[in-house]
Length: 117
Image: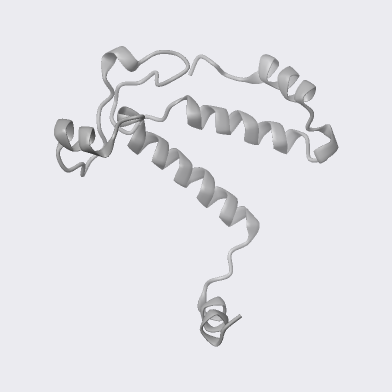
């Protein structure tokens, strides 16, 4: 490690793992809400349709359905965030990695996943 890297490490605030997990989770939900209305679009198409994007975009009504987004309001999250929530709950309920089998995940999701959100 260089002296500059050492200096940066010392100057950076110390975050514990819970802070990092929360930041990743919230950041993913924000990215989901911001990008979902134009998911799969090329940057050129986004510019052609919306110009410079500076606010949350509304969803196209035909894209609102279970398994994607259920709410038309700009900034609404999609199934991507709900799936992350289900997986996080599964991991928290199965702290031992040996318990995190495909069979256990299937049982958890079929019993507790909220597919209607």
